[in-house]
Image 1 (tube, each protein chain N blue to C red):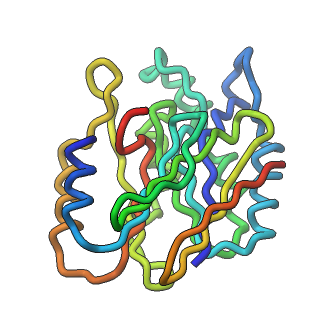
Image 2: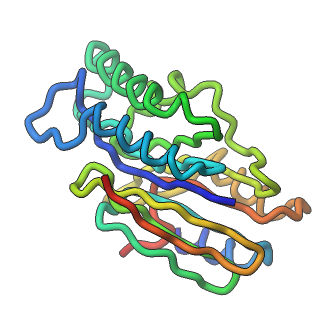
Length: 66
Length: 160
């Protein structure tokens, strides 16, 4: 996957990469023109989900729980 | 552009289990909470169900797992925005493709190009993008489509 990440960074278009799998999650992080975020597992209390808002200028992350 | 992101339900309802933390009622409640935010897109990034990986060829178990996938889908079908589903390492890939056969893998939402990728787990549990998925990935990076891209996938791009 590191090779794929390098390819993402080499392409100049703005991108957001959303993933799961890692139950602890990772907050939105920005590297050059690419943003990465990993959702915390909804399975685990307090059952979180996220909302990202994308504008021309930036991306914000808010996390909510049930 | 507003994206709701929810992941890793590990649902077992028709499939029995002794460590059930997330049932269909909880997922439905999550879908209702998400709807209240009026997102333009919902991204569900894998492990929708907690399919027993030692029973991939057990037809009875496959049928039960498929019922659980339909339960997940029913929770989100009423949302008014696109819902993008990715399968994870705990989903049965063949069942997933059947249940979500109408899902596009490359589509537009408000001028953003949304692309879903399906990865596999290789040796030593290392995720990998291979075959047609790998070719598709490099294709979308090399074409001349100017839209910003949103990539949806189960695995992280780098290990933590």
